[in-house]
Length: 182
Image 1 (cartoon, rainbow, N blue to C red):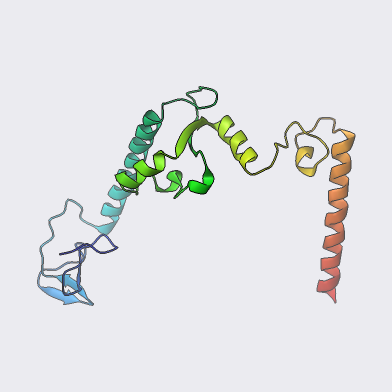
Image 2: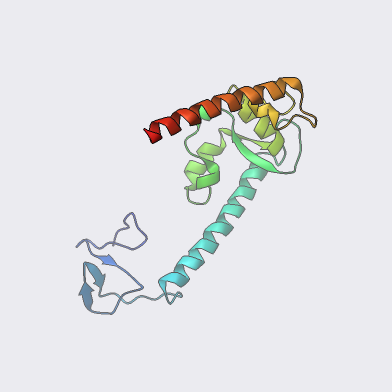
């Protein structure tokens, strides 16, 4: 038997063996059931629960290994708290480690780790903002995004930026209502 994209083996005749619906000697709707399943799981739900738990444990084990391999501290400030795995150059990123850490092969994981560094949450946030060509709204004034961080009391520059934003928003909303009412 050879493996297919799913988790159930496929025989050379193209029929799948489903261990949870198998009754020895029967073939129903393309499912090969002539093999006897020896499994510690009595149902698909039990197997799925086991796999969820297994993949979660695998994710945390691999994440700990990656953190240890990358030095165990932030590359910028040296902190050992709230560490995150960051791609040094986002353009060379093959996949997101956060999403695929538990499901990718050791070889692919090893190749991806070579492109990464450890950063604490604060340094990672700063790097991401800088990489996107933006600046942090907190601590600046005179923009709509800075308005929520300003004050109390709000400074005149932030108040004016918010007023202008609200005027524009109301103008667009009135225009939409006129079109909808016509």
